[in-house]
Image 1 (spheres, protein in one colour):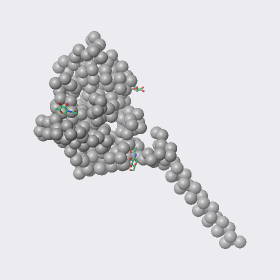
Image 2 (cartoon, protein in one colour):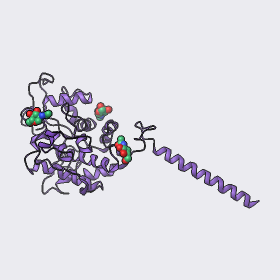
Image 3 (tube, protein in one colour):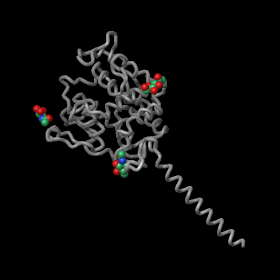
Image 4 (tube, helix red, strand yellow):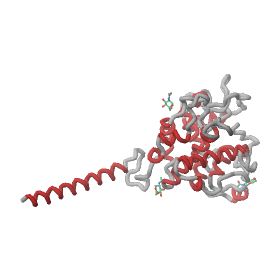
Amino acid sequence: MAKFFFVLALLFFVVAMAMVTEGKKEKKCDKGWECKDSVYCCNDTITDFFQVYQFENLFAKRNFPVAHAVGFWDYHSFITAASLYEPLGFGTTGGKEMQMREVAAFLGHVGSQTSCGFGVATGGPLAWGLCYNHEMSPSQSYCNPDYLYPCTPGVDYYGRGAIPVFWNYNYGLIGDGIKVDLLNHPEYLEQNATLAFQAAMHQWMTSAKKKQPSPHDVFVGNWEPTKNDTLSKRFPGFGATMNLLYGDRVCGQGFVDDMNVVISHYQEYLDLMGVGRERSGDNLDCAEQAAFNPSSKSDAAS
Ligand SMILES: *[C@@H]1O[C@H](CO)[C@@H](O)[C@H](O)[C@H]1NC(C)=O
Ligand SMILES: *[C@@H]1O[C@H](CO)[C@@H](O)[C@H](O)[C@H]1NC(C)=O
Ligand SMILES: *[C@@H]1O[C@H](CO)[C@@H](O)[C@H](O)[C@H]1NC(C)=O
Protein backbone atom coordinates (compact mmCIF):
# COMPACT_ATOMS: atom_id res chain seq x y z
CA MET A 1 0.00 0.00 0.00
CA ALA A 2 2.74 2.45 1.02
CA LYS A 3 4.57 1.51 -2.14
CA PHE A 4 1.50 2.32 -4.23
CA PHE A 5 1.24 5.79 -2.65
CA PHE A 6 4.90 6.35 -3.20
CA VAL A 7 4.58 5.59 -6.92
CA LEU A 8 1.51 7.81 -7.14
CA ALA A 9 3.33 10.67 -5.42
CA LEU A 10 6.29 10.22 -7.73
CA LEU A 11 3.97 10.36 -10.74
CA PHE A 12 2.40 13.60 -9.48
CA PHE A 13 5.84 15.03 -8.93
CA VAL A 14 6.96 14.21 -12.46
CA VAL A 15 3.79 15.67 -13.98
CA ALA A 16 4.10 18.80 -11.84
CA MET A 17 7.74 19.27 -12.87
CA ALA A 18 6.80 18.86 -16.54
CA MET A 19 4.14 21.54 -16.14
CA VAL A 20 6.53 23.93 -14.44
CA THR A 21 9.14 23.48 -17.18
CA GLU A 22 6.49 23.93 -19.84
CA GLY A 23 5.26 27.09 -18.12
CA LYS A 24 8.77 28.50 -18.03
CA LYS A 25 9.29 27.85 -21.72
CA GLU A 26 6.03 29.57 -22.57
CA LYS A 27 6.84 32.57 -20.43
CA LYS A 28 10.25 33.01 -22.08
CA CYS A 29 8.46 33.54 -25.39
CA ASP A 30 6.46 36.51 -24.19
CA LYS A 31 8.65 39.48 -25.08
CA GLY A 32 6.22 42.32 -25.26
CA TRP A 33 6.79 43.22 -28.87
CA GLU A 34 4.70 41.11 -31.16
CA CYS A 35 5.98 37.68 -31.99
CA LYS A 36 3.16 35.14 -31.85
CA ASP A 37 3.75 32.24 -34.28
CA SER A 38 6.60 34.05 -35.98
CA VAL A 39 10.25 33.19 -36.51
CA TYR A 40 11.11 36.24 -34.42
CA CYS A 41 9.50 34.70 -31.39
CA CYS A 42 11.81 34.08 -28.45
CA ASN A 43 14.68 36.15 -29.82
CA ASP A 44 16.44 38.15 -27.17
CA THR A 45 15.63 41.82 -26.80
CA ILE A 46 18.22 44.39 -25.73
CA THR A 47 17.40 44.15 -22.01
CA ASP A 48 18.21 40.42 -22.15
CA PHE A 49 21.86 41.05 -22.96
CA PHE A 50 22.45 44.67 -22.00
CA GLN A 51 21.65 45.48 -18.42
CA VAL A 52 22.11 48.43 -16.16
CA TYR A 53 25.55 47.30 -14.92
CA GLN A 54 26.80 47.15 -18.50
CA PHE A 55 25.55 50.65 -19.18
CA GLU A 56 27.39 51.76 -16.03
CA ASN A 57 30.58 50.02 -17.20
CA LEU A 58 30.52 51.67 -20.61
CA PHE A 59 29.78 55.15 -19.34
CA ALA A 60 31.62 54.90 -16.04
CA LYS A 61 32.63 58.53 -15.66
CA ARG A 62 29.56 60.35 -16.91
CA ASN A 63 28.43 61.44 -13.44
CA PHE A 64 31.85 62.47 -12.14
CA PRO A 65 31.84 66.07 -10.92
CA VAL A 66 34.00 67.26 -13.84
CA ALA A 67 31.53 65.87 -16.41
CA HIS A 68 29.20 68.31 -18.17
CA ALA A 69 25.85 66.50 -18.04
CA VAL A 70 25.88 65.05 -14.52
CA GLY A 71 22.66 63.20 -13.73
CA PHE A 72 21.29 63.57 -17.24
CA TRP A 73 21.96 60.26 -18.99
CA ASP A 74 20.69 56.97 -17.64
CA TYR A 75 20.02 53.38 -18.61
CA HIS A 76 16.29 53.78 -18.42
CA SER A 77 16.15 56.51 -21.07
CA PHE A 78 18.31 54.41 -23.39
CA ILE A 79 16.03 51.38 -23.01
CA THR A 80 12.86 53.45 -23.38
CA ALA A 81 14.13 54.88 -26.66
CA ALA A 82 15.43 51.48 -27.84
CA SER A 83 12.05 49.84 -27.28
CA LEU A 84 10.66 52.10 -30.02
CA TYR A 85 13.25 50.89 -32.53
CA GLU A 86 13.53 47.21 -31.62
CA PRO A 87 10.45 46.33 -33.70
CA LEU A 88 12.27 47.93 -36.67
CA GLY A 89 15.31 45.74 -36.11
CA PHE A 90 17.52 47.80 -33.81
CA GLY A 91 19.44 45.36 -31.61
CA THR A 92 17.05 42.59 -32.63
CA THR A 93 18.51 41.50 -35.98
CA GLY A 94 20.62 38.50 -36.83
CA GLY A 95 21.06 36.47 -33.66
CA LYS A 96 22.68 37.27 -30.34
CA GLU A 97 26.21 38.14 -31.43
CA MET A 98 25.05 40.56 -34.13
CA GLN A 99 22.52 42.05 -31.71
CA MET A 100 25.21 42.75 -29.14
CA ARG A 101 27.59 44.07 -31.78
CA GLU A 102 24.95 46.49 -33.04
CA VAL A 103 24.36 47.90 -29.56
CA ALA A 104 28.14 48.29 -29.11
CA ALA A 105 28.39 50.00 -32.52
CA PHE A 106 25.55 52.42 -31.87
CA LEU A 107 26.83 53.24 -28.39
CA GLY A 108 30.38 53.54 -29.77
CA HIS A 109 29.14 56.41 -31.90
CA VAL A 110 27.31 57.92 -28.94
CA GLY A 111 30.30 57.55 -26.60
CA SER A 112 32.81 58.99 -29.05
CA GLN A 113 30.62 61.97 -29.92
CA THR A 114 29.82 62.88 -26.30
CA SER A 115 33.20 62.17 -24.73
CA CYS A 116 35.26 64.62 -22.72
CA GLY A 117 38.03 62.05 -22.32
CA PHE A 118 41.58 62.98 -23.17
CA GLY A 119 44.94 61.25 -23.00
CA VAL A 120 45.55 61.56 -19.27
CA ALA A 121 41.93 61.37 -18.01
CA THR A 122 41.44 58.97 -15.11
CA GLY A 123 40.08 55.64 -16.28
CA GLY A 124 41.54 56.31 -19.74
CA PRO A 125 40.17 58.37 -22.61
CA LEU A 126 37.46 55.81 -23.46
CA ALA A 127 35.68 55.95 -20.09
CA TRP A 128 34.20 59.41 -20.58
CA GLY A 129 31.33 58.84 -23.03
CA LEU A 130 28.06 60.70 -22.28
CA CYS A 131 30.06 63.48 -20.63
CA TYR A 132 28.20 66.12 -22.68
CA ASN A 133 24.62 66.56 -23.85
CA HIS A 134 25.30 69.70 -25.87
CA GLU A 135 28.10 71.63 -27.53
CA MET A 136 29.85 73.80 -24.93
CA SER A 137 31.04 76.88 -26.82
CA PRO A 138 29.24 77.04 -30.15
CA SER A 139 31.11 79.26 -32.58
CA GLN A 140 27.97 80.03 -34.58
CA SER A 141 24.19 79.54 -34.54
CA TYR A 142 24.17 76.85 -37.27
CA CYS A 143 21.36 78.50 -39.19
CA ASN A 144 21.29 78.08 -42.96
CA PRO A 145 18.47 79.37 -45.16
CA ASP A 146 16.20 76.42 -45.83
CA TYR A 147 12.87 76.30 -47.59
CA LEU A 148 11.46 73.33 -45.70
CA TYR A 149 12.99 74.02 -42.32
CA PRO A 150 13.55 77.77 -41.87
CA CYS A 151 15.27 78.85 -38.66
CA THR A 152 13.05 80.03 -35.86
CA PRO A 153 14.15 83.55 -34.83
CA GLY A 154 16.18 83.57 -31.66
CA VAL A 155 16.81 79.83 -31.73
CA ASP A 156 20.30 78.33 -32.06
CA TYR A 157 20.94 75.01 -33.74
CA TYR A 158 24.25 74.04 -32.17
CA GLY A 159 25.08 70.40 -31.40
CA ARG A 160 22.81 68.62 -28.95
CA GLY A 161 21.96 65.03 -28.12
CA ALA A 162 23.54 61.57 -28.04
CA ILE A 163 24.76 61.71 -31.63
CA PRO A 164 24.77 65.49 -31.75
CA VAL A 165 22.43 67.18 -34.20
CA PHE A 166 23.62 70.40 -35.86
CA TRP A 167 21.85 72.87 -38.20
CA ASN A 168 18.20 73.87 -38.56
CA TYR A 169 17.47 71.46 -41.42
CA ASN A 170 18.79 68.48 -39.48
CA TYR A 171 16.71 69.40 -36.43
CA GLY A 172 13.71 69.80 -38.74
CA LEU A 173 14.22 66.49 -40.50
CA ILE A 174 14.91 64.46 -37.37
CA GLY A 175 12.07 66.21 -35.53
CA ASP A 176 9.71 65.09 -38.29
CA GLY A 177 11.12 61.57 -37.96
CA ILE A 178 10.49 61.30 -34.24
CA LYS A 179 7.35 63.47 -34.32
CA VAL A 180 8.67 66.14 -31.98
CA ASP A 181 8.92 69.81 -32.92
CA LEU A 182 12.71 70.06 -32.74
CA LEU A 183 12.84 72.92 -35.25
CA ASN A 184 11.14 75.22 -32.73
CA HIS A 185 12.52 73.39 -29.71
CA PRO A 186 16.02 72.05 -30.34
CA GLU A 187 16.62 72.44 -26.59
CA TYR A 188 14.50 69.33 -25.97
CA LEU A 189 17.59 67.29 -26.90
CA GLU A 190 19.51 68.67 -23.94
CA GLN A 191 16.53 68.49 -21.57
CA ASN A 192 15.26 64.97 -22.13
CA ALA A 193 17.62 62.01 -22.38
CA THR A 194 14.97 59.72 -23.87
CA LEU A 195 14.46 62.16 -26.73
CA ALA A 196 18.21 62.56 -27.12
CA PHE A 197 18.62 58.78 -27.54
CA GLN A 198 15.57 58.65 -29.77
CA ALA A 199 17.02 61.28 -32.11
CA ALA A 200 20.28 59.31 -32.26
CA MET A 201 18.51 56.03 -32.98
CA HIS A 202 16.48 57.73 -35.66
CA GLN A 203 19.74 58.70 -37.37
CA TRP A 204 21.02 55.13 -37.02
CA MET A 205 17.84 53.54 -38.43
CA THR A 206 17.07 55.99 -41.26
CA SER A 207 18.72 56.61 -44.60
CA ALA A 208 19.47 60.22 -45.40
CA LYS A 209 18.39 59.81 -49.01
CA LYS A 210 16.24 57.50 -51.07
CA LYS A 211 18.23 54.52 -52.36
CA GLN A 212 20.81 55.01 -49.65
CA PRO A 213 21.16 52.51 -46.82
CA SER A 214 20.88 53.44 -43.14
CA PRO A 215 23.80 52.93 -40.74
CA HIS A 216 21.79 50.00 -39.34
CA ASP A 217 21.54 48.47 -42.82
CA VAL A 218 25.24 48.67 -43.61
CA PHE A 219 26.11 47.27 -40.18
CA VAL A 220 23.79 44.25 -39.94
CA GLY A 221 24.24 43.17 -43.57
CA ASN A 222 20.96 44.45 -45.04
CA TRP A 223 22.81 46.26 -47.82
CA GLU A 224 24.34 45.28 -51.16
CA PRO A 225 26.92 47.82 -52.39
CA THR A 226 26.33 49.07 -55.93
CA LYS A 227 29.12 49.26 -58.49
CA ASN A 228 29.58 52.92 -57.53
CA ASP A 229 29.88 51.96 -53.87
CA THR A 230 32.52 49.38 -54.67
CA LEU A 231 34.48 51.89 -56.76
CA SER A 232 34.25 54.30 -53.81
CA LYS A 233 35.52 51.54 -51.45
CA ARG A 234 32.26 51.49 -49.50
CA PHE A 235 31.58 48.02 -48.11
CA PRO A 236 29.25 46.66 -45.40
CA GLY A 237 30.65 47.09 -41.89
CA PHE A 238 31.31 49.60 -39.14
CA GLY A 239 33.33 51.88 -41.45
CA ALA A 240 30.31 52.63 -43.62
CA THR A 241 28.26 53.63 -40.55
CA MET A 242 30.78 56.44 -39.95
CA ASN A 243 30.54 57.39 -43.60
CA LEU A 244 26.74 57.74 -43.39
CA LEU A 245 26.76 59.62 -40.08
CA TYR A 246 29.74 61.93 -40.58
CA GLY A 247 30.71 61.82 -44.25
CA ASP A 248 34.04 63.28 -45.31
CA ARG A 249 34.55 65.02 -41.99
CA VAL A 250 35.70 61.60 -40.75
CA CYS A 251 36.00 59.32 -43.80
CA GLY A 252 38.32 59.26 -46.77
CA GLN A 253 41.01 61.15 -44.87
CA GLY A 254 43.24 58.25 -43.92
CA PHE A 255 43.63 57.15 -40.32
CA VAL A 256 42.77 60.47 -38.69
CA ASP A 257 41.92 60.97 -35.00
CA ASP A 258 38.26 61.79 -35.70
CA MET A 259 37.87 58.33 -37.22
CA ASN A 260 40.15 56.40 -34.87
CA VAL A 261 38.32 57.64 -31.78
CA VAL A 262 34.98 56.28 -33.00
CA ILE A 263 36.52 52.89 -33.74
CA SER A 264 38.26 52.84 -30.34
CA HIS A 265 34.97 53.39 -28.51
CA TYR A 266 33.21 50.67 -30.52
CA GLN A 267 35.98 48.18 -29.77
CA GLU A 268 36.23 49.13 -26.11
CA TYR A 269 32.50 48.55 -25.74
CA LEU A 270 32.73 45.17 -27.51
CA ASP A 271 35.31 44.17 -24.91
CA LEU A 272 33.30 45.51 -21.98
CA MET A 273 30.17 43.70 -23.16
CA GLY A 274 32.08 40.43 -23.38
CA VAL A 275 31.83 40.11 -27.15
CA GLY A 276 35.49 40.95 -27.74
CA ARG A 277 37.11 43.33 -30.21
CA GLU A 278 38.21 40.43 -32.38
CA ARG A 279 34.57 40.34 -33.47
CA SER A 280 34.55 43.94 -34.75
CA GLY A 281 33.69 42.67 -38.23
CA ASP A 282 35.11 43.39 -41.68
CA ASN A 283 35.60 46.90 -43.06
CA LEU A 284 36.03 48.47 -39.66
CA ASP A 285 37.42 51.78 -40.90
CA CYS A 286 36.48 54.24 -43.62
CA ALA A 287 39.94 55.70 -44.17
CA GLU A 288 39.76 55.20 -47.93
CA GLN A 289 36.02 55.54 -48.50
CA ALA A 290 34.57 58.35 -50.57
CA ALA A 291 31.63 59.96 -48.77
CA PHE A 292 28.12 58.77 -49.60
CA ASN A 293 27.14 62.44 -49.36
CA PRO A 294 30.09 64.73 -50.08
CA SER A 295 30.11 67.82 -47.88
CA SER A 296 29.72 70.59 -50.46
CA LYS A 297 26.13 70.97 -49.30
CA SER A 298 25.63 68.40 -46.59
CA ASP A 299 27.82 69.93 -43.92
CA ALA A 300 25.62 67.84 -41.65
CA ALA A 301 27.63 67.37 -38.48
CA SER A 302 29.92 70.07 -37.13
C1 LIG B 1 15.93 35.57 -34.51
O1 LIG B 1 16.96 34.64 -34.31
C2 LIG B 1 17.22 33.82 -35.43
C3 LIG B 1 18.25 32.80 -35.02
O2 LIG B 1 19.39 33.40 -34.48
C4 LIG B 1 17.71 34.70 -36.57
O3 LIG B 1 17.97 33.93 -37.71
C5 LIG B 1 16.65 35.72 -36.88
O4 LIG B 1 17.13 36.61 -37.86
C6 LIG B 1 16.30 36.51 -35.63
N1 LIG B 1 15.21 37.42 -35.88
C7 LIG B 1 15.42 38.72 -35.93
C8 LIG B 1 14.22 39.58 -36.15
O5 LIG B 1 16.50 39.23 -35.83
C1 LIG C 1 10.85 62.97 -22.33
O1 LIG C 1 10.25 62.69 -23.58
C2 LIG C 1 9.44 61.51 -23.55
C3 LIG C 1 9.05 61.17 -24.98
O2 LIG C 1 8.38 62.24 -25.57
C4 LIG C 1 8.28 61.74 -22.63
O3 LIG C 1 7.47 60.59 -22.58
C5 LIG C 1 8.80 62.05 -21.24
O4 LIG C 1 7.75 62.37 -20.39
C6 LIG C 1 9.80 63.20 -21.28
N1 LIG C 1 10.45 63.33 -19.97
C7 LIG C 1 10.47 64.45 -19.32
C8 LIG C 1 11.20 64.42 -18.01
O5 LIG C 1 9.97 65.49 -19.75
C1 LIG D 1 28.19 57.04 -59.65
O1 LIG D 1 29.17 57.99 -59.29
C2 LIG D 1 29.33 59.02 -60.22
C3 LIG D 1 30.52 59.87 -59.79
O2 LIG D 1 30.51 60.08 -58.42
C4 LIG D 1 28.03 59.81 -60.32
O3 LIG D 1 28.15 60.87 -61.24
C5 LIG D 1 26.90 58.89 -60.74
O4 LIG D 1 25.66 59.57 -60.72
C6 LIG D 1 26.81 57.70 -59.79
N1 LIG D 1 25.84 56.73 -60.28
C7 LIG D 1 24.87 56.26 -59.53
C8 LIG D 1 23.96 55.27 -60.17
O5 LIG D 1 24.71 56.58 -58.35
